[in-house]
Length: 107
Image (cartoon, rainbow, N blue to C red; front, side, top):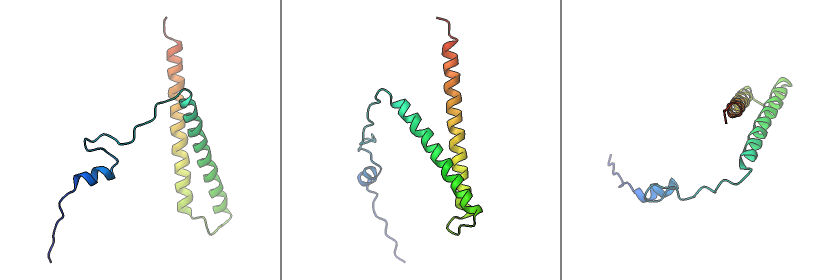
């Protein structure tokens, strides 16, 4: 068996990773505009809500013996919605704690 190795092409590897030759990202992040945090939070809550609705629908279909819905997919959807809800709840608790800390500061 004749095994030949190709030389490593650093330039193409960096380009595939989306980086410049010096390792900096090619695409710059857009500047954060006013109200972006509110939009991001609303989108996050909506995506968690959608995941919970999908999970509930899959549970219902599984209980009705729908052959196109598997137990594994249903369990994964349930876990995704639970993790998303826990993360959202954690962010909410941190925000409330930060607000309370700010309100209790001496001026």
